[in-house]
Length: 342
Length: 298
Image (cartoon, rainbow over all chains, first blue to last red; front, side, top):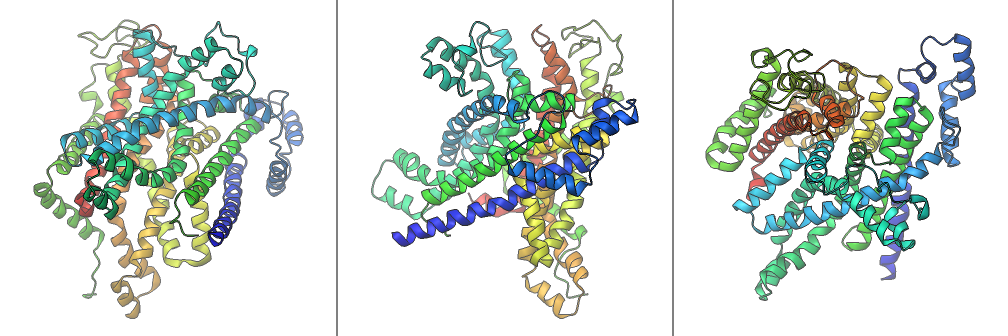
């Protein structure tokens, strides 16, 4: 047991250290895209007709006159101090709007993930259990079709049907106009904030606004999980312990949805790490469709304003998040599945 | 070179076609999925190449009908806010998306495949470095990367193609590298080496043809994905200059008129995206199941 703990610890340390070059490469990649590629931020900010001396002054101000390699190291140095720099357009730190908007995106992403799992996993398990029947085929078809639906279009169609035609759900924003966010806002996660403030009325309003965007993400990404769950379940259902469970006369439903699904879930968990990147991308599009004030909207707004430091900051935060999630998932995997070798 | 066991690219394609017809008889459903995919792709390709034979109006004609007209006999898909015919715009829009998605998949495969071959074949430090870079790129949300690229490059057909292409390079790299690693241990590669074949010849004539079959599947699935990415980029306004009929841009335009009930502006271009992406997915899935019969044991 102690030996096992030691191994686990060793794996934790190695895996965490491995994340460092990955972060480093991602940060360098962001730098290459935003600084080395053609396109001059100062010219696009001030316009091509700005006087050369003004452009030059701005370049010096932003440190863009220095050689690229010096810019690169000052960029890394800044990030190492957890400093994302200052906005080029507004008098604010880049981190300020990011911290404001991040909870909105996370709230949407995590709720979306819940819907993805709630839809995808049972459907996939059911399809595996009924493999090569009409129902299996129907579920796989559903998985393939929803995978091919652009998430922004799905959002618009749900808005059209449930927002505009039926009038059941709001189609924009996180709260209604009669909810005063300032009375409960604390963490930025409105579900938590409204509960902490004991404001049930606002809580319901928040859920009501969250429903359509979250289910949009849930439906579109459930296709991948239908497929993953089905494939993993098929493997597990052929294993000896499932045969043994059946031989002992355990009811079929229990064998499939308890014994088998539990074991099929472990690889699904690893895939969740990879799918998180997809979920974030989906969240950006869903935010534009539902006027959801999150990181995606922030990124696009600042792209139109050509506020390069903020664009860079948002992308860096996304990169850090993706790395962190994949790290956490790998570590969780090692804890859950004792067979993982390290 | 009579000892050659491997197939030339033409031979590989021939093998695919032979397994096609056999599988058609053997596996009903997968076969029909494949056929359906091909039919969809051919239909949309026809629309993309000859939109003028089907479109009742010029896609840019601002006097085609009423403003925001609902679908009617003369405008089966209605008209948009600038009185343009939605059917004609939707037909012409297939050009942009199909062209960009196909070109992007081609560009990323042309970069990813040689890199994967080289990395897997040479191994060592080179392999580690390229793999690390590719894995990092792969782990990053593709759309966000494409957004950053598109934002820096500015709108334009070539730029959006490059922005989409960049994010799929790791897909080809990983696939080809993995296959190369296993193929290079095969006996016939060993034999070629023993006969004194030079390294580039081994890579190109012995390994490459045996790797390329699986690329076909990924290429098709990749186009489906690239279609969605192109649509997303142009939907958020980062892809194309105004004036080019494009499904993503038309949906973004239609979004503004959704509250006034103009459902036709978003519905039809969106449906076309789904159908086209589904066509390429079905082709890829069908090919995958037929080329790899072990999957069918399930």
